[in-house]
Length: 332
Image (cartoon, rainbow, N blue to C red; front, side):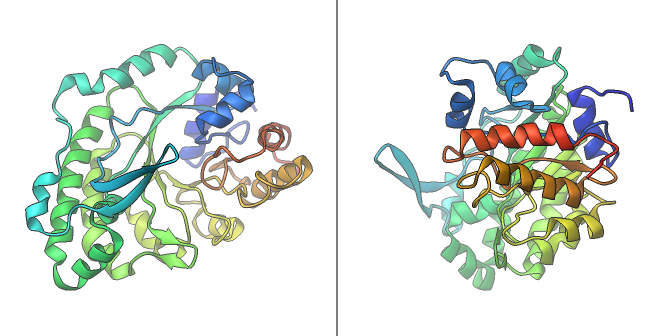
């Protein structure tokens, strides 16, 4: 098979095709980046090259939906407290950046200009509104409103939908290759709300944003989304991330949905990358490749992101293993 560029590799997987090599991409904490580079001074491109990533991520938060909740700082860390939007009169607290301001898109344009000549896929992070509503209300107020003030939930989501649709419309033409949108809507035991709530409240609104997105996009949620995955796929996303291994079976998901959506992630964080040996990290990569690699439509990555408490040697073992075992045709 002809050798592909990293960008071609990622886009082939998102299109459910079989590339020359299983792509490798992840959300890597700055502390891990510095640990891998053995320095605080490095460029994004040098980091991606050293770890062997096929995609480079713009990490600015300009296009991430604002969240409206109280916070407290303890020991230098910010902790989220209760949401601020409890009733209709609180809606005036929901102030968003001006989506029509052309200068809002200058940072991502500069980033694309800087890295467009490289062979990496360029992506950025967004949050289209599902978990934004819960964060901005607080889980208790959100749950109560579903029972006796559903209109408030819908009004909050409408504001996120309108802003995100406008932002996505502009991002379509800045030169990025795909978007990953974070929607943490599940525990390991199952979704945070019923499939009925998903269908009646969230899906119609999020579909408006999805329809505005003309470039590939990936849906992220931790936890077990299996009970609502069929519903979520009506949004016609290109990928699902991270197929949480603590609650979802990658092999089964691949068998059932692999012809409809690209799968990204699943490398265990609870042990293999954080407490295990390098051999165990490599074995975990092999498991994922065997489970989801055949036929293409799979991007290797962690079960969420690479946080500061992962083992450097295990991260490097993961990066090496996908290159070693992920070449098509697979021989595992």
